[in-house]
Image (cartoon, rainbow, N blue to C red; front, side, top):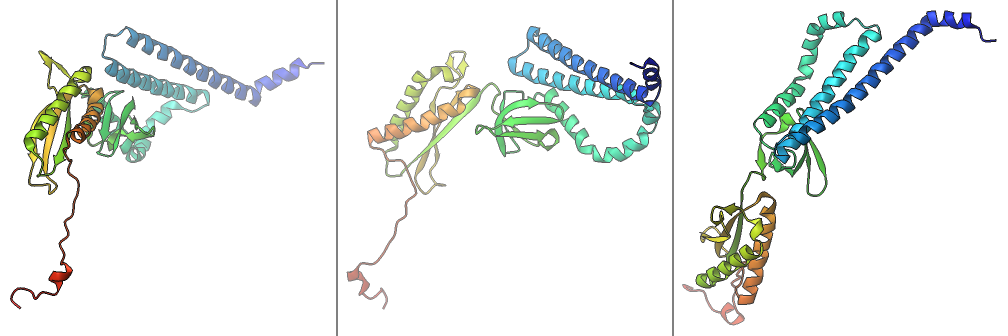
Length: 296
């Protein structure tokens, strides 16, 4: 027969304390999970209604999610401590001493948070921007938080970079970019013919890929054009022509690839040679080998 008295005694002993604490912790964890879901929905709803640029919206949304998540975790942790019998007041009182010791180990974390704040505040880059970090890592910003930034390379590799490690940023998503393509031709080629061919390439690319260039008040802001001869003495291979054009951020590399290919094809069709490394060897023929050198 079920002994109610025995069950009641167990509920009043150590077992009761364990059960009470376990149920309290479970309730707090459940509440934290619910708060996380509610906060996530509220943030999503807020930014769906907000009139903000898409890139900036993604960045701020990620930041708000990160802040809400850390805040709920901290609140849940501080709420669980009293349930487990920890004196929070005494813990906070000793935080000064412990904080001094931990502070030396948390310096990098503080630097990450401060740097992350200024990256977002100064709008150095946003989620979705294509950037180059520290002249080494290039890719699309997938996440931007107060502590860490994640970059996805074109190859698919994903980099996690602490914000304090970000020293230089090259952003390729700032309204306008200039495509710069160079082509070098041997000195023996006719520069007037080269200019004619390059001009033809510029007009063809402008006509076929008009929507990829940056619009201006009257047509394009800077259509494909020959900037001029930019090198005749530094390169031993020949003279260097440069073509420039202002493009939309997403079309920079596309236009540069197309210009290079069209220049190559046009030069082949017109019989113009592109420069390449060459070496000239001078030697003696058999007849000259037996002759005495001048002065002998």
